[in-house]
Amino acid sequence: MKSDLECMGLPPELCTQLEMESQVIKIKLEHRKMGKVVTIVEGIDDKTLDLKKLASYLKTKLAAGGTIKNGRIEIQGDHRSRLKKILTEELGFKPENIVFIEEE
Image 1 (cartoon, rainbow, N blue to C red):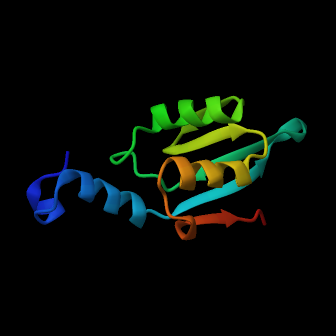
Image 2 (cartoon, rainbow, N blue to C red; image 1 turned 120 degrees about the vertical axis):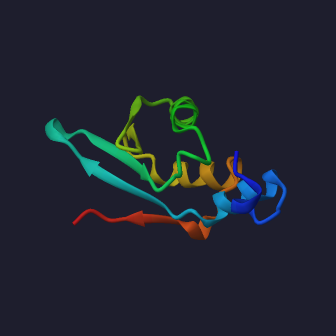
């Protein structure tokens, strides 16, 4: 929970919503050995959302395995477009705050 000073007197629900809307989420694809592909989601503040619960929810919705490492969610397979749809429609993140990063 945020203190009143951190929320500047706003109700806690509104403060949490503002924090979610201000986050920039990066979604990228990594290629691993043996031709495996992993979708990486970074930039979600673990103080706003429980990353473990979020990862579990995303894995269930995408019917894929995955894990949390170094504050980022890794999901097996290429799920970039479906992830953006879930994050915007079901979790309330702004679509313009979700960025796809292309591998170099």
